Image 1 (cartoon, rainbow, N blue to C red):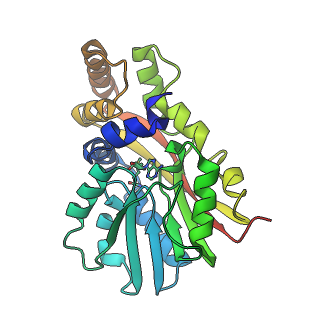
Image 2 (cartoon, rainbow, N blue to C red):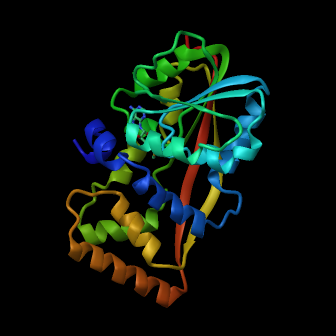
Image 3 (cartoon, rainbow, N blue to C red):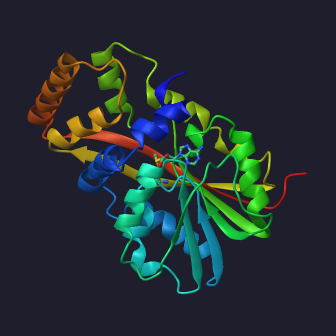
Length: 271
Ligand SMILES: C[S@@+](CC[C@H](N)C(=O)[O-])C[C@H]1O[C@@H](n2cnc3c(N)ncnc32)[C@H](O)[C@@H]1O
């Protein structure tokens, strides 16, 4: 099994701390052309779809970046629980959110077995995580089960064309067409996520987020490349990638990368 769908690799290596995810978030913070930012965009939709008094569970919450970025926008009536199956990254989220006023709960949870009774939450957030989950139908059914009848799931994810210029570059360097990104986008992406959610939800809408990267520095992209923990990467690959980035930026002034990102909002019960 490849890394990004291997739960042991995810828990014990890739997400044993927030470091890898932070390296990936960093390039979006530094180089995104849309100044809004994906977390603020997501949160606007959350605010528009969830009542002012609500109980919210995030599954696969990672480093808690969503809540850190939006900490001043959280309604006083929201009761928030962040969860992740990787205890290392969950502890980093706890530290990061130590001083926020909305005082979230933190729980170690595998989305395939959510340890709450039926109809507990008004909303569940599942951002950039369902593509990692081996039994996705079970995970989605679990999310539906713990939602109240009129509850809502919000799930951001990527599409196949996400960062295609970057993936094209690294597939040339690694001589590997079978990259993690392809596996991720094929598992639960913008192209096939709706059909999967419709197994448990009667209404699903997709909203796209317009954005791209204009990368003008080499080093954050090298960190991004390394953060993926690709099993076959060598120092020669890193050197080649670094040189290729230098060349592109020198020649064009920047490396332009398209982003294909969006979210699904699901409600109701599938029959
Ligand atoms: C790409 S990160 C996304 C983090 C966060 N949602 C965000 O948008 O910044 C994916 C997260 O999903 C978690 N994850 C993967 N499989 C999981 C599972 N079966 N149950 C719960 N969390 C899982 C990982 O540990 C990781 O923290």
